[in-house]
Image (cartoon, rainbow, N blue to C red; front, side, top):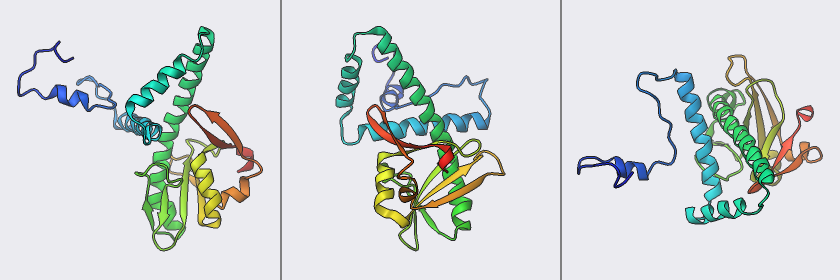
Length: 218
């Protein structure tokens, strides 16, 4: 908007626009409920986490070039549309995972970890560790997966799977179902690598890959 809108020296909007990564506009007379605001916030957190992982040590210019290269890979419009649909579906999956994941982490930190007899340190602000919490008393690592309903298929990133392989019995996967209900339940799986190494499936998703486990094996 620079140059298109008259701004005086006291108007800081231009500077704030430049620093805005992601936002959503609400009409002042149509502010949604707290539940909707929280859901939108969790979606933004999920998108921010994806962006942080994607950027890693790369510059935003390099990421933009990668995006352009991917767009030019195929001149087939039907193939491009198919890729867009896949990307939209993948974004939907990740956004919902971010919402349930944040709620599950909250439940684990405030309830489940205490029930398991652990005092934990929240590590979710750090990206790429391969776990969400670490025990304060001893070296135990916890990865949390949440479900809106009953337990179902779930994903592990390549880093989470590799760390689970390295830490063995010191790595605990905690699954929490019905995270938005009072009657949620949980399952703690110690050494998930050893337990699931013959059932887990490796899946490719641009620009990386992840591992998925079917509900039947939980």
